[in-house]
Length: 547
Image 1 (cartoon, rainbow, N blue to C red):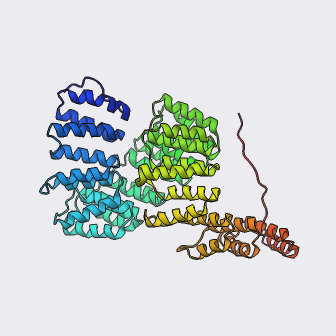
Image 2 (image 1 turned 120 degrees about the horizontal axis):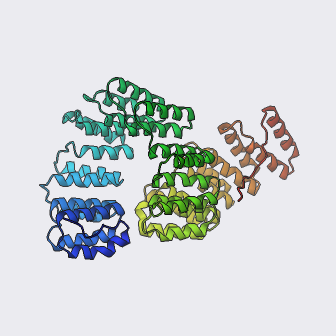
Image 3 (image 1 turned 30 degrees about the vertical axis):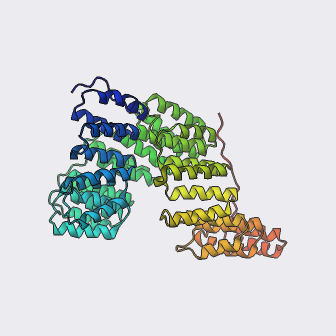
């Protein structure tokens, strides 16, 4: 069927043209095309219009249409609707399980994927080689090693160990769970090793920081006749760049060219991302310029990787230039670029610009929400941060994660909202089943400490299920300094000295506390200990970029 006009990509444009398109004599291919556009663009409203038209035409009950709609609703986060569609497909149709499990796993609903799989087993349906990769993906991302091992046993019982896709998913699962030797054994057991299996294995090694081992595997496979492709080399480059190993990156680029593969935009983006993650902003900007001079065109991934470099050094001038460039090349509306822009403007202190961008977004992810909440909290707009948190909870509660609560607790701490902070700490655990991490405890210690509840803060530290880190003890020490509690400050300094024996900061704070309390003997004694251990106080400095 010839289309009368190009299908638009923005959600608003999709909705505006939806009625016109569907009022025409529409073929199955056109419906499929439109649903895919709604899925990729997150256009839930337009997708519902298509769904209603399918119901009117009596096509919604057909499995191939239901499968597409399930994927669309799952991608838009509408799991209850996706589940209702799934339940309407006849139980005798095995393909419904393949569709719904694949959609849930692809969209990141990993816990729901495993629950659904258990339901499938409860109905007596035996999993096949199309279902197992989705389940293994969920096991790896959670991670759920026990379930993953159970799947491995099932694979052996059902003789799926010779299926390339199942093996690749199994390797990926073990790698994500940190069992690299297990992953390697599965890879070695593959009858026919190909570049797909090699890439999964290399990705696993790189995620575990084992870049040299990954390169060794690539060289072994080359000798065995398996030629690495651009994905293989880009994975290695990304790992080396994240590790800050410039020499390895240069070596990999040379080996890549020798093997007949030319670097592409992904290669350049990986190098830029590595510089940014290692707070080497100048090198990131220089590499981006070199990329452009070499004739490569940046993608939305390149832009979203580069923008944090502006935030790291609070360089809003570069950030605005990149923002303008993103609009020129047509990626300014991309959700990841928009989220990075919100984060950049917020960290640079331009809260109004960040808020304007945030409100104009038709679709937001957890990064967008968290960046805006953090922006408000870190710049003193604590009430606005909490209001935005509550709005996120109402509108997109499924997107709340551990960083969301870190941002909200930071707002409570800076705004002196003690009771609210305590309630959020409990809600996070009871309602959202998020286990507190070190950063949550640091926020709570800071919250209690600022309010003068030092004993309560110390009791919380003692009740922690993990060892407190530098930030937890640092929060307590800061509170002790604020409220003049020398005894607890001494406890905090002792732990900080054990964690960072070469750091003088905590000892200097304790010395100042002694001096402030008139305990000059203690202050002098501490300075002698610092001198004996050759601990020096480094002068503070500020970095301001002008122009």
